[in-house]
Image (tube, rainbow, N blue to C red):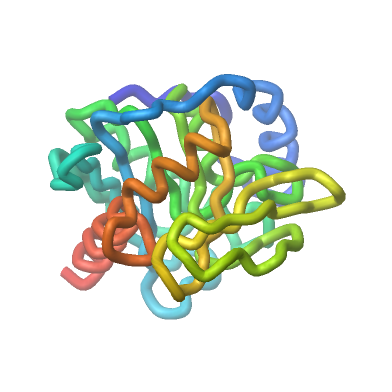
Length: 228
């Protein structure tokens, strides 16, 4: 599939922040997302050791699932090394080069990208899901295990219960319970979708477990590749 080259890879945090600020104007957050995506891609990256520092070995995986059966229909994995240091708010630049290579190797163009991370729930309102959405032109959402920015109240205990994630008085995402009595996830839009549709899609991707099947499959694929 096609991924656009919209910038060079940065070497400093200042360059990375400038890229985020420039690309943020390309976001489309005023359109409804795919209500019934035929195919959904999960993206995840596994790191060797503690994952810190440049040069750390990593594996970036993309698993494309059938939107109805949740069976894998395509997948790709790239093994490489982190070329950018760990800086809060700029973590995407550690993962993007390998994720872009993995996406380009796909034979299927998915209807929706689901990132293990964040979209506009980000200090500069441009997390990994936003970045991938702009580079690919595809609808994208982020599903985080913990909150990166903002405050929220604990949602109800039943599957589907949810509440707003607020940052500076702005709704930047939603805290969503995907299974009865388990910890919620943090959903934020990245590109070409709305929050209501994003949450409905996340619930459709979590029939049995807390995390979306897309994330679970991509996580397994990346860890297997790193161990191989």
